[in-house]
Amino acid sequence: MDDDKGASQVSGSFVAADYVVFALMLVVSAAVGVYYAWTDRKQRSSGDFLMGGRRLTALPVSLSLTASFMSAITVLSHPAEVYCYGAIVVFHCVSYLMTVLVTSEVFLPVFYELSITSTYEYLELRFNRAARLLGTLLFVVQTILYTGIVIYTPALALNQVTGLDLWGAVVSTGVVCTFYCTVGGLKAVVWTDVFQVGLGVMLAGFLAVIIRSVMLQGGVTSILSDSQHGGRLNLWDFDTNPLRRHTFWTVTVGGTFIWISIYGINQAQVQRYISCKSITHARLSLFINLLGLWSILLCSVFAGLCLYSVYKHCDPWNTGLISAPDQLMPFLVMDILGDYPGLPGLFVAAAYSGSLSTVSSSINALAAVTVEDLIKPYRNISEKHLSWISKGLSFLYGVLCIGMAGLASVMGGILQATISIFGIIGGPLLGLFTLGIVCPCANSKGALSGLVSGLVVSLWLGIGAQIYPPPPDMSRPLSLTTEGCNFTTTTGFNWTSTALPAQPSSTAPAHTENWYSLSYLYFSPIGTIVVISVGLIVSVLTGTSHFVQCSLRLITATEFLGKLDLKKDGEKKFGNTNPGFCDVELDLTKSSVPS
Image 1 (cartoon, rainbow, N blue to C red):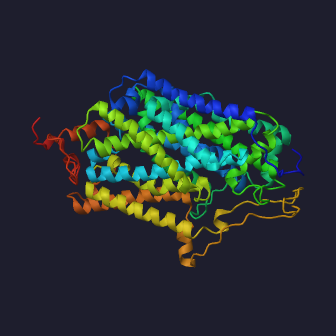
Image 2: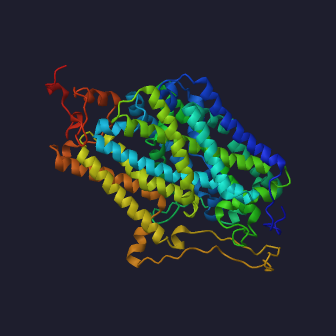
Image 3: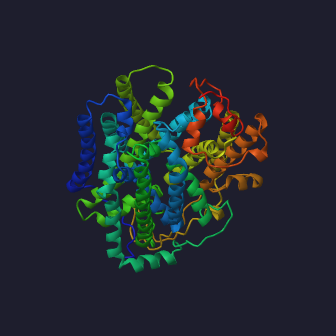
């Protein structure tokens, strides 16, 4: 593309070949659901439907893990983030590595060896039923909010590049997901993810944009040079100020906590790796998934650099050609790939495939926790009926998530909104599970007090950040210009001026601004730390142990099961602490419980 041209006024539209490529992806996804509904038509248990019979292998599960949270948010919002704020988000590579290591060594062994369907079953085994119910409800709220954003995002992309009705696109996404998730269960979800990631649908969409951009801009070196001059290669920012939106420390430390809350305890991810046929396959799936995460992140960051290189002289956001930064990638696609039938369809299929995977994962996980945590403990229902209830719940949650997409349309920046949701709710939940796994002296009073305290603090910071946005010197948006624009709008205005993006002003009083300017990536670690700190203090004050006795160490699944065996009646009433973890570590040599 000629540098003086920049953004063009017309973004183009889909042609028949684009619709064929896009429709093929939807048809194959739905067909996978039909296939597994037919082959498993004789399945009699909810476990087969929700967990794939625990017979899955590492490779398909690893691809499914990658796809589940690499949605349209990655395809659309990561490049826009790089375009507006720079490539420092590439350090999420470090947080991904730390996440996989912690998950495989701390959380995976416990959940796998307990053979539980819902991760929140652990909270009742470790603490009490109240902790389990509160954890389940928080997960349901978090997942429905997140899924609404994921459904809305590709619909926005499709609306931008084709003019197709926005809400028609929202409904079509939700209907296809709900269909194959309802009829096919976890196997359909996993193998659809294999098609979407394993066959390269997501990467192919990125690569089409990257290759064409490199050809237009004169090579990779030219794109990197433009990005360097434009300040987009701002990688070496080691400022420790926690108020800065993105630095090496906020991305790596904050990102690690957020991703551990997703991979370590989130039902949608845990449900996948504990469905493997052995713990070795489960661990292997996590490490293969790491390669997928790195590949997609690097592609999305470089696509953002391509975006800047193409529009460095004429920003389509400030000229009004698009209404939000999240529309930059689909605009670029139609601008540089519009003359190649099928390629715009491939990109939209990439955005959609990620979201289909994420939404189906969420629906399946929501059905699992509802059956295991809200129905089974209170009703004696046959496995055949539970299987039908699971399918009905998948359908119900699919409809509910479509409705929640309406809320996503008013949430502003998609990437930050998504991470904020995981930070505000996922952080305290991570603290609760961590308290149970590494703090032997923690009791149910401490757990519940810590969870409520962490949630209050996270909500306070998150809501405050929305009311009082951080000032530009903390978020540091990079300059965007329209000086190279050379077209006339429909109102007759000739774009030849320079403009910077309007930033929301902070109206917070001076003494509160610092609190609410905290990087949104730190919402999760603060929530986690508050839960653990308050949980330990309350456990010590309400128990019989002292601080010197309350050591931090990993409780293995074997030790955990041994302590559970001390309770013979097996009845866990609401609010009662599991006696295997009564305030102090048990001295098994002095136990008088008969064997």
